[in-house]
Length: 225
Image (cartoon, rainbow, N blue to C red; front, side, top):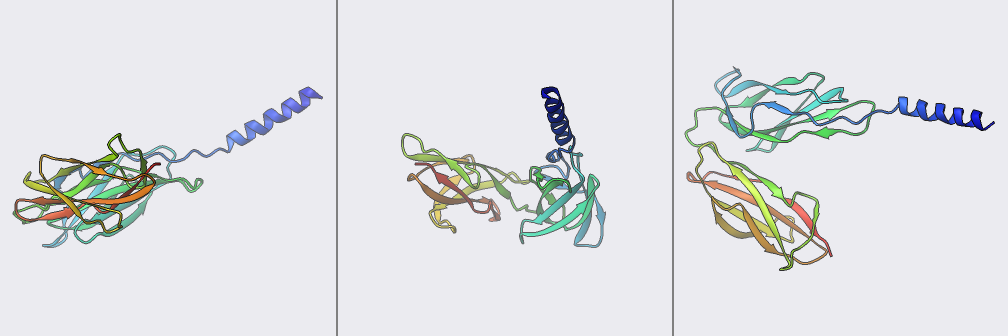
């Protein structure tokens, strides 16, 4: 009887594991390159170019969702495909971000790639800086304050002209944070005073020598007790 029960249990476990569906993994982006100027593609007209976005295949994935966002208007274009490339029409002389989500119809889980920025080449003489990349704390993160009751904000910036002159740090308890400090281009961190069990909001505005600017978008984090 024990042998029969054990054999039945083995069949049950084997049967369940056979039907197990693994979650998709994140795709690795290929083109356009991060923080680059894209000069390739098919010209549609004087203002628009057709670019082929490319990425590597990811494991356990049936389809991909490509999102290309105009960083000036925050307008996204979304394309679904089962291939590892897709074409999207984008405006010339405009900065964009793009990312890919891996999906599997048999799993509710998805996996998002990194988000890369690029500038679609045009006739402009001065490039708008890319939005600063927030490195810490990331949005929704729970952090521990240091012995001075402070948290370090860190970010990185990029500009095709390499003419960033300053960063404005906006930080407060409000979801529309106010200006706290203006820092030179060679500074990418700031310690801020915090209180335990409190949610804070922050963003970085990047400014270049021509007066062009971009915003990272608002991030939030919570300080532990």
